[in-house]
Length: 502
Image (cartoon, rainbow, N blue to C red; front, side, top):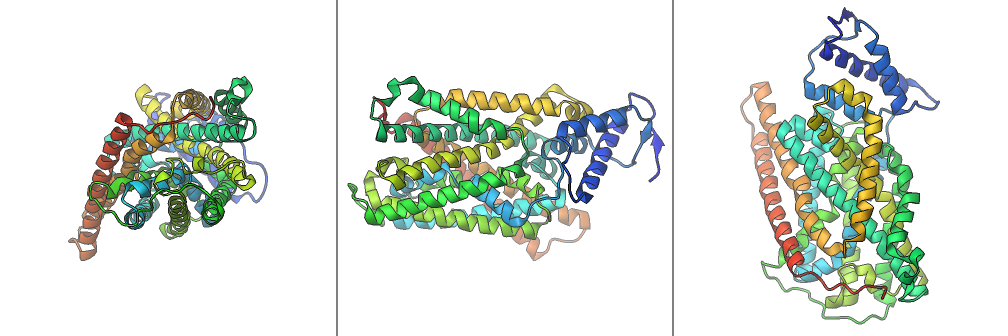
């Protein structure tokens, strides 16, 4: 490779190109190592930047945009480079990111949407669209080699929309993290109330404020600063936990003796039938996490990612369908917004399900915090107008500080949030952005730019893709408005929450 000298110490573009090239060379050399411990991200950056900044050599030539360079510096620092993971490991990560708190709200949503038939039909239809948008995102990522959701929007749509998506990702993932902390506190309360008594919280060390904080400190903090594919081992535990919870719901339908309300099979009112949409959007929102997961694949291409997505969505569909139907059939109109609260936790197998739900929340929290951490980092760099070299040099410290602040504040806010039903409804409107609107915009731009670059006339396939992309945007706008309206209604008329501890 030919080398040219940097014109001066102020030639920032030349320095940044060298930083990116050096990181690329190090990543390539690491891929060739058969064994050994990889250096830390902080060591990589300090060694790369120090070597380059004292050198007068410009390793490569070529044109780079500011956004390309800043994306390379920031994203590599967080994700690093490795040999990659297989598609089935990616599938577990996607399933773990999707399955979670939404499962608890599905039976109640079926009751609110007009019964079993309407709930299942809407569920299947919107799940199909959610799977289609995952495939769209995978195809776009394979063309643009993006590593976060906001970076994809940057390359596929515009910088303005990228900033907007980063803000939405920050809000969505952050509030979802709060939801997981609430779930952890709820499960501790269930356990203590069942085996100690309803006055357990008079002991400070059994109060939800203490249990949420100390459990998160011991089990979540150690995993906050790692790359996203390191969560694959926890994902196995999380997925198995949800399957066990699903099995308990099914078994309790046949063996439990619970007071049952009316079972609505078909009571369709167009004003109610779509009430399940916010829960579906919340339950299947793994799209923000899917792009960092894609970047960790050993074989980065659309077919491999599509295989992982199809398998993951089918697993989620099976779990949500079984839980929603059997949970609703068990309690009917008496079903709780959090279905697990309706079961008798003094039964050992139900108690295990309660514990495993807390475990599932612990395993999913780091994945979502990774996404919000990256989004906040991008916003911070842009607001501070940092150069790409500065963004790379200070990334390890920035990542640590942001993660700790997000973790601490999520604990504080979880303490003052009464229940998850309101949260699920409101988050559904943001999930509609990630599942429908943004993928539709990416597909629209990819189709238009593809025809413009080749100079060919639009084919029948292009017109079909344009129709699909517009359809996603329209459907997403509908789901967003519906979810927002439903959330506001639940805020104005909230469900009555009876505290476990009195």
